[in-house]
Picture 1 (tube, rainbow, N blue to C red):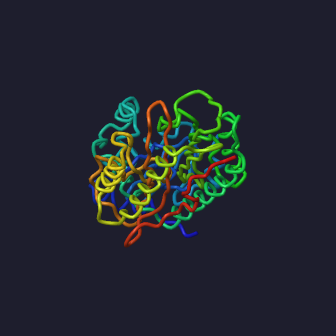
Picture 2: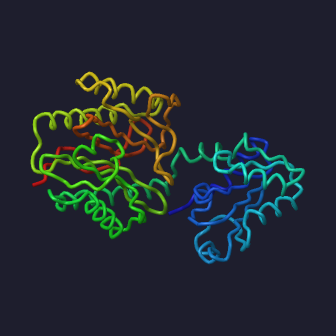
Picture 3: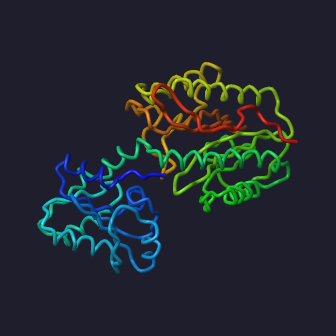
Length: 360
């Protein structure tokens, strides 16, 4: 698939912001700009040039995968990138304000006398704005990642049974997604059951799945570093009337959130509408987190659907919709889909069923 010249776009943005150069040290932003996940390196971008520095451990990988810039082997990538910047005679350089430590900033100040470093005008802000709108390459990766999640969910409906440990479910889910092509080897997702489903992030320990309990799975595939994100909650053995009512309320709340997403609204307005709906159904104070978030190279990106984000949503931005009800000491239910804002609404990438599945 054709790739966007992201470095070229950033070079134009640097000029607009009055910056002569950008020094990118954070792995996520380096990956975004070069299309390659390289474990160590520094990327120097000036008005008409871009050079990626990495050490001998990663140089062959960089030569195979890095796109859109010159590649140099460097024993100390950041130091050599700073040396090249110093040799250019440029007078200012933007840094990643949120991703450069104080120690690194002080080190760069010492290495770059006479160059105005601009952490307060950080290029991570420029890059965050660029990353909000997904290009065709990103959309393709995210759709493929979500397809893996959907297929894995179907597999888990046949796998989960009473008596299993949560860890067994998590390992099977992660292993199966890797077999389908996911890069998410770390299996950094949530599997919880019983009372632990009342904790949005699953609590601690390795519980045993019992009949009459919920099992919550929050997970997603990963393609080229782009992570999908979905949640499904299932019941094992049986579900009583209250469990069914909680589940149906969350399902309807998700449908409401999906129906409200479109360009021109704020994430806050969508979140508040869903939160009010859940409270009106008899569960005030039981929806304790934001309704959704964008995602891409990081699972949680901006914009957000929460009580604080008043930015106006735009076409091309990703969003999850993940309402939940959490009853302290009892159980919780969350259902989560993900997709993209289109010109007049929302395209849901998640195809998994929304109905309560009761596993025998």
